[in-house]
Length: 70
Image (cartoon, rainbow, N blue to C red; front, top):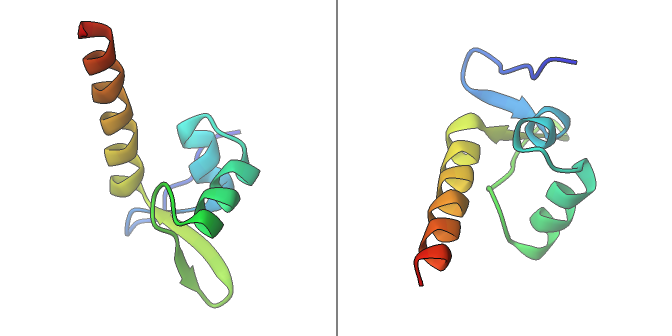
């Protein structure tokens, strides 16, 4: 299955989870806990901005590199 990004850069929780290599439940729990990328609610549906997901992934890579350098 391919990750679907809408023309405005949004994707559903399911596609966002695939994009990050996470489970849907992980993103749902992060949303409840106020962690991770900020979800957008539109008409009862949950979306994430691709730019927010990219920032999260990049920050995690940088944090991993910083730990390895210590």
